[in-house]
Length: 372
Ligand SMILES: Cc1ncc(COP(=O)(O)O)c(C=O)c1O
Image 1 (cartoon, rainbow, N blue to C red):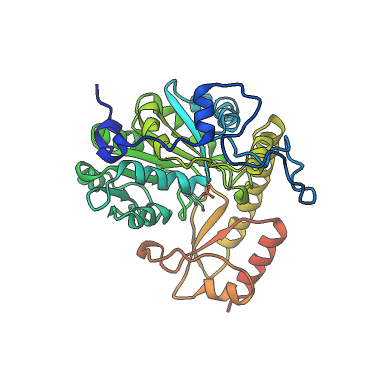
Image 2: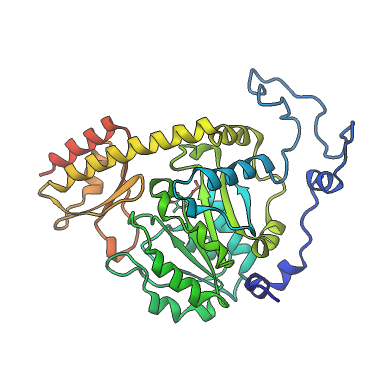
């Protein structure tokens, strides 16, 4: 039987033969050569200071085209370390490492949407890259804003599903900080079964691990989950993220993946972060950050200029101020760079503030207190 991915994927992708990089060919051959003269690499590792003192002094060689050890470490992390056992991966789920969650978004649009023909659907205010990736590939974006409580407008999403290849959701959502109600997600997954793939971007999931949608992949193979090491793991610079999807989806995505997506130095750092000790450290840091966030939001909520501090399940907080005060510019004048969510009427005038170290949040609080 045809899967939804089979139905949605454009003919051009169906016909595509993945680029046969030297590593991909070698892996397929399963060969044990002793002279590797197939990829126009230098045969020895250059020493530039101590930068080549990596895991195996192999920086002269191209990395593995799909770094299996990071993918399997992340799989173990999903299976073992998520607080709720219900977050286990489904049997048919596959996982690939990509260059940050942003690459996963781009790959999905390029795999399942035909330029000038297909559309994605987004629910703003939300992360801007979904629409940007669609725009950059001449794919239309249907917009169904979140309701006043920042939850899904299921009726209006439903009305668009027939024409939509991919629904992009973000939970916990950037910039609002809330989690999508799981029952709403299930309702959407039921309604979209034969129509649209549903992506849940879980970039901030470590701040609310019990809310992950991973366990729903068993029942809904058209659900795709995106993750990253950029947020709770604190490794934004190494550009490592993950795409978790059913084999029926992954078979097409893996045709478009770059020949060598993950650089070896990034892979080495990612592996350390995903070790037993690394995960423990991340969980401890996350707990400390949540305590600072809760302290900061409680303090900010008492200020006269503040209208609403939205509940956050992330490492940032969205604040609505009274009147027309421009707190973004005010903070900027004090050298504090926050973010004003762009072009979204429902969060106009709000400021999104990342939660940093306690001293940074004390300084930010003092700045807000002194606003006249
Ligand atoms: C919801 C969301 N998804 C994805 C990303 C990008 O993640 P990465 O650094 O892994 O590309 C961000 C970054 O801010 C984000 O907020």
